[in-house]
Length: 588
Image (cartoon, rainbow, N blue to C red):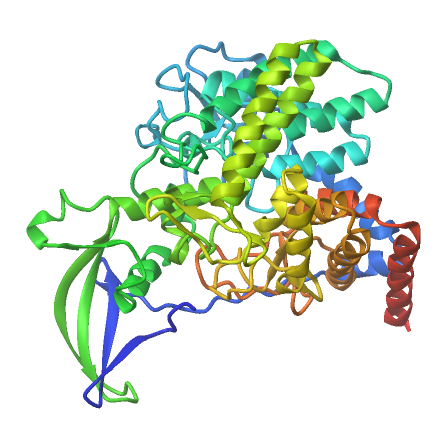
């Protein structure tokens, strides 16, 4: 659990309060509650439609409203940072005509990057001032709200929805953008902003490629030449995760790792008070970290810290906190290792959860279930693509790699007694005990044995709640823990469960999530980033890090369509009937 508003410890009947300050100002740890607010107009539209038509129409319209193009001024703006609008193009790239036109129409500066980039981490975002958007040649769909750029793993779930809605050209353009990122920015990026030039996101590229290729093939337009090009880029993407520094010690597995140092820019600009909250937590629980607090002296401040310095005050007070007498107790900064872990957590996409220790600060010390399951699938996907392209030897090599990774996953990440997969702390050589919904990813990837799948399903109740599958049973205050359900993991888990023959459970958990999304859509006419799986609402009370619940929302839209397609028709009809009944009662 996170610390409350004041961090208190008792000492001989008196109360000692530790206040954490930054730049000489006391900072409280406030509980932030975001209440989703609908509009009367949206509700009116919903009440006039029938069944699932309103939500389908919302999603279909959303593909257009969430699409960005470099012919539109709004694409360049970054709502997360208060900086001038700058569009950066690769150093070796000629300024496209569309960008020249954009400069004239939108008062936007177009600048070349300071150097040619071959690999992730070669460019220092701190030397690119101001931060700005990175050029991409094709249109793309953004998640929604403040997220005004194309994201790495979000895009897979968006693409699943696009191909389901027969928007194959738009989906293919997004995959082509990732090829462009690999070619000119060194990797599939967290997103196409300069401050993301040091990290990637969970590797779904081969899954995206095959989703588009299969959709083209089903439409009678199989394009093997495109698949051959895609294969070459997928190989390059894969290599990022299988060489240092993305290797998890001597395990033969991989880890998340960000090449940057110090605070992630968005944690300073977009998550007010987060770092002071982290410092306060480790002050209150000194045994809860790995030496993440570094004492600093006034004279050392310019040289020592990578990030903010937090002043400490020790106060003797009454138990009612009516008055306080405080004295300075020095200052601390968060360590370089903390910032490495925080950045790696952001590359994982699960920001913030306590899965990799408090605030995810030890992420880079773990071989994660999610990443290694995705890399196993990547290896199997590359084998499949090799088969299609007639590269038999390469197919055999990929399957050999997949077999080796599977063996290591079973050795390090499977707990036979618990019947679940867990992340592995390769630094401490210790398996985690933190139950997490990523335990279903080995099912989705197809690497679990039937016996392991049965054991995992015996633990389904750990995650299943009225509104779908909760991320974990641990209430940390982070948005990627209890009580929240997220569309991407709902889809991965449900498809994994279905793959191993547990159709009834897959149908039930899919329905729980779909009906939660639909019920909240009836209330306010929006689809959200995440949902409370316990209360079946879109109201959130996140207290650690980023706390909003954004409207849009790209991956929820895509997952809704994908899950709906896999439901039996009787369940789809039931969901539609619930919509009709609720709409009817709302108009009476």
